[in-house]
Length: 592
Image 1 (cartoon, one colour):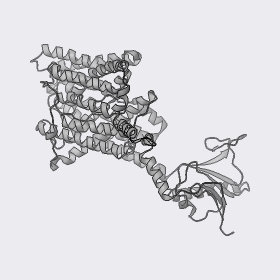
Image 2 (tube, rainbow, N blue to C red):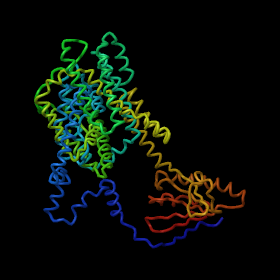
Image 3 (cartoon, rainbow, N blue to C red):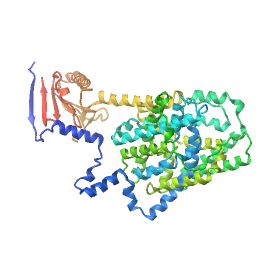
Image 4 (cartoon, rainbow, N blue to C red):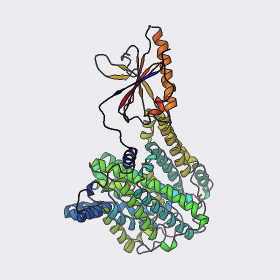
C-alpha cells in the first residue's frame, strides 16, 4: 500500500483574516444583520444626533412628513379598528378573568405608546385571546380570580410589567433570534389548540352556566359543562346561536366581497349594541347574564399595585415571559407580513422595544398585556391606514367611550361576548395549513400536532414548550446528521444533480461526487466521515463488478466550510479526496 501523501496547490486568494476580524464580523451578522448604524457614518454631529433620534423614536421620522390626505385615511382606519377593539377588549378581559373595563383601558394607553416608538405602519395594538387565557390559567394556579379578585388583578398587572421588561431587554440586546425558534408549525399548532379550548370555554356563556372550571384542558372544560346541566338556559343558547350565525355570515361576506371588509369589522360592535338593547329590556331576567357595571373615567394609575411577593413571583414571571414571547411572535410576524405587501421593511428589534415600552406603561396604567393582534391589524390594513396615527385615532375613540359611553356597554350580554370570541377563534384553526404540512413535511406536521394536543389535553405552556423542544431537536438533527447525495452528470450539459432525483444522470468512472447538506464541524464530522466511507464501500462493490475502481471522492460543499480541519485530520481514506478550504485559500488533496 502506498504511503499517505498530501500535496497543496496554492490559488489566487486573499490573505486569511485574523481571529478578531472574523469574530467581529460574525458578531455583527448575528446581532446587527441589518447594519442599523450605517446611516450615521460620515455625518456631522448635529445631523447624526437627529438621525439617531429618528431611528430610536420613529414618530420623529414620519410625523414631519405627515399630510392631511394621510390623516383622512388614518381617521377612517382608526374609527373602524375602534369599533372592533371595544367588543374584543371587553371579551378578552372576561377571558383573562378580570373586570371588563380593563379590556377598554388596555386599548387606550398602549396604542399611544406604540404610535411613538413602533416602526410598523400597519399594526393596530390591542389585547389577544391566547395571551388572555394563558395569563388567567397561569396566575389562576396560585390565586383564584373569584376568591381574591383584587390580588389576582394586581398579579396580572405585575405579569404585564415583567412582559414589558423582558420584551424591552430582548430588543435592546438584539436577541430577536430567540423568537425565530417559534416555527410556523409551532405557531399553527399552538394557535389552533388555543382556539379550540377557548371555543369550548365559550359554552359557559352560550349556555348561561355560572359555575365553571379554571382549568384549560378539554377534559376539564367538558366535564364542567356537562356536570352543570341544571344551569343551562335555552334563552341564552338561542341568542348566542343567532349572534354567531350573524358574525359568521359577515366573515363569509368579507371573503366573497373583499371591498366589504368593513361589514365584518363593525359586526362585533353591532352585535354588542343589539345585545345591550335586548338585555336592557330584559333586565332582571336571570336567563341573560350581562357584563355589569363599567366605571366611567380614564385609566387609573396601577403602579402602586405591582406585587413582587416571592410567594407568587414564580407564576407571575412564568406568565410574563411566555405571554411576552407569544406577543412578540404574533406582533412581529404580522407587522412583517403587511410590510412585505407594501414593499416596506419592519425592524423586529425596534418592534420588541416598542411592545416592551407599551406593556411597561400599560402595567402602570391599569392595562394588561397587549401586542399587535392579527384581527385588528388586518382591519387596519384593509381600511387603508397610512401611518401609526391610526392607533392614536383608535385610542381617542376608546377615550370617548370610557368618558361617556361606558355605562351603555354595562348591559352587554355575556353570550354576545361568547359569540364574538367564538367567531374570532374559528379563524385561527388553519385546517388547510395543517393538511399542507402533512403533505409537505411529516416532521413539521408532528411538531404542529404536538403543540395542538399538548395545549388541548395538558396545558398551554406545556404544549408550547413541547413543540419548541421538538423544533430545536429537528434543527440539531439537521446540523448533526446532514443529508448527503451522490451527484451525476446530466447528459448534454455541465450540470451535476442528485442521481436519485435525476435517474438519467451518469457517474464519472473512477470518481465519486458527493454533496453535503451542511458545513462540516465538530458535531457532524464523525458522522460525515462514516457516511462517506459507506458511500465508498457501496460504490466500490458496484464498480468492481464493472472493473472500475474509485480513485477520487469529490465533495461538493456549496457554502462556506466551518472547521474543515475536523474532517481533514481524521484517518486517511482509501482514495483521493479533493476539498476546497476557503479559510486557508488552498486545495488539499489527501490520498492513500
